[in-house]
Image (cartoon, rainbow, N blue to C red):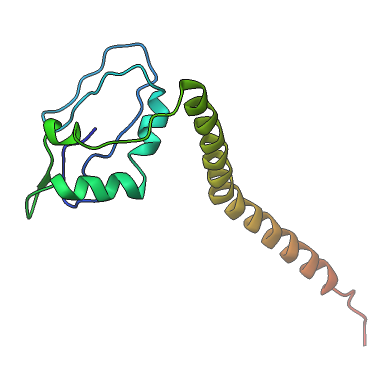
Length: 131
């Protein structure tokens, strides 16, 4: 989780580390260990509720900061692990669909444009008659 940013919205941006290797972080980030679904926690840090809570603790003008102690005061809902897993599965599907639309739609539009141009050229190409 990043502890500094140029704006309140980006401070506390989080990623869910799913790997098993050791990783390193900079001095302006924090690692939180817990026994919850890591993707659930990362999704929670993207909510309006989390944003409203971190606004209370974020400080600074040019560089916005929040300390690990202040982050620990932010509350997030913790349903059962099974419910967290269910929520993550749903959100992962939505994210995959959204990525599919943003990546797949431009490709589909380009393919339809090429198809249109091909048929347009075929339809508008007439045999030349000698006059």
